[in-house]
Length: 230
Image 1 (cartoon, helix red, strand yellow):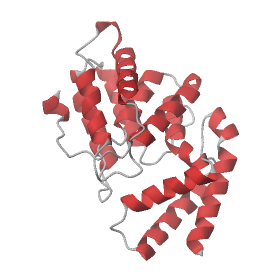
Image 2 (tube, helix red, strand yellow):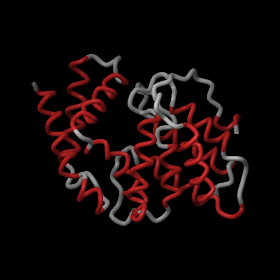
Image 3 (cartoon, helix red, strand yellow):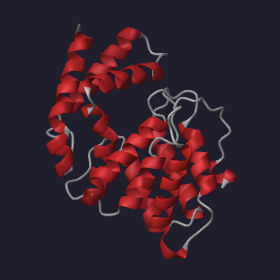
């Protein structure tokens, strides 16, 4: 396991409220559900390695807090998924490799899943589905019949519908992650992303997301765009 997922990067305690034992248990349940009755090796080393990745010092938004929020949102959306445990594993891996100055994070995260999950006892078909879902977070544009993709993308984007104070904290954390980008360039790039999101017919694809998150998310995006313009 260490040879497959090996990470020795120093960790930053950026999530003092994260319940590591609870997260380990959540990972174990998802892994055991995905690999089925055949079982496999102890989930704990896999969970610990992923937890170490999510605590790397360069992270400000893509932290254990974000991982926990995505998992919580998947729990809310579970009935819309075809295979909830596969979606949960995809959440664990979707930002497992994260360097703010790199553009291939999703691809590297997907390849990490493709190496680690077979070793952990997950069948090839489900491993491939986890990797596909991780790659889908590049575009957040699941097909109309892609139930698992819709759940993962909605859970990942649910922060856009956060209350004003939480949304402000999210945008501040994103800016911290991109501290190396000059202010003018960051504002221009961020504004372009916001416009792309607002141009989408729907931000959320599950019935729950569309009903409960869509309007608030669009309000937050428009408000942030106005602030950037000012």
